[in-house]
Image 1 (cartoon, one colour):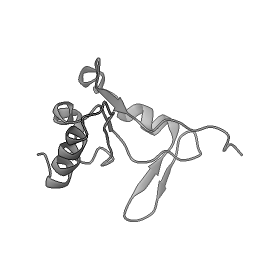
Image 2: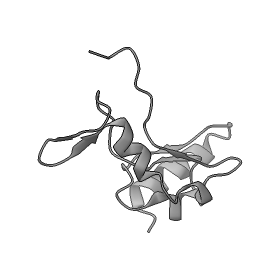
Image 3: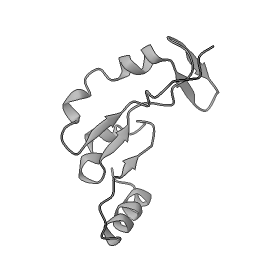
Image 4: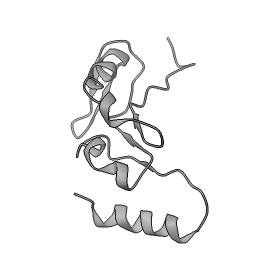
Length: 98
């Protein structure tokens, strides 16, 4: 499941010989919570958040989700998080209210 471009990034980070945090962002499309713990520290579990409580903004090739939608997508993912590895639901939304 580990794609070549991710392996390239991981190898480069290890070669730097410095402590770094590696955040994988592929918007949860390939269920990174099931495989990324061996290569990264956190991984996106959803698409981007949008400025609404409970909506979906459909742009054809991708979608943005409201707070409730992203919250609901976290169901069952808690088991994949732990010390040194975390789910990232893209929930930082502030100062953009209408």
